Length: 149
Image 1 (spheres, rainbow, N blue to C red):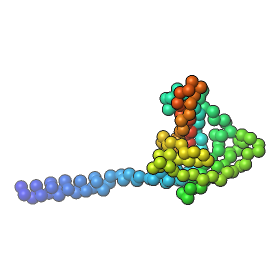
Image 2: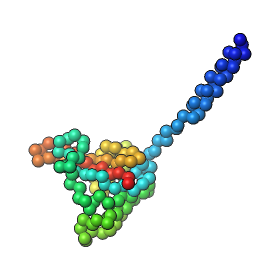
Image 3: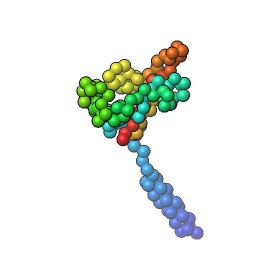
Image 4: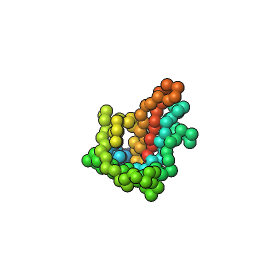
């Protein structure tokens, strides 16, 4: 009886060790790692007139020529904006160097101008917004959403 109990305890212990060692580890990436790991492209941007957090077709002000533009963020706080093959204005430079930084405990991201609040930053999506007033004087969000492609 003692041998059976000992064997059962050994099997249970080994099972627990095996299960915990096989467990997939979650690697937490910093905001800088998430931002700099790949090049970003616009998915959409516009004024969220109805404040639902989504840019509907009627709210977007993204032009087709912006869909292939790329934003590359470097870990040292520099970046490169690259026009895609569709050019919005013929006089625009094909690339623009920029500086970026996180502000307010990495809850805001500044690119080209004032910091925008970060709504989402993960392996696939970067979404920022700033607040503005609509034509009725109500506070609404101007949302920019980027994706990796």
